[in-house]
Amino acid sequence: MVSLVLKPRTDDKRWTAARSSAPVFVLLSGWRVDADGTAHALLRCAGTRGGSARVTASAKAPDVAGAARVAFTLDVNVVLYPREG
Image (cartoon, rainbow, N blue to C red):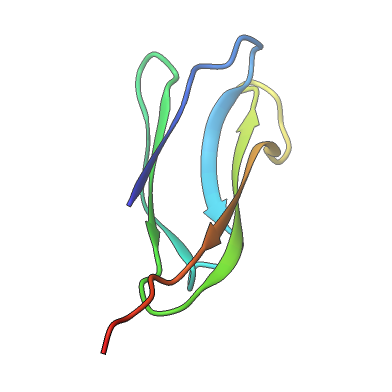
């Protein structure tokens, strides 16, 4: 598991959501935004296969209409541990 912590933004935008491009390799199992604007995501990596995924977090100003835009990107590579036997 990996814990991702995004500090509050200095502009007017706030963190709105996080998403994984390949949930089979990296699954977001938790997302929350604290009152101070800090966002927390829990990432679980696959244990049975290796691959890569892009985790993105979106942000937008609360009083502006329209979709949130990607403001953070994390590329994750999942590598299998060698098995004995």
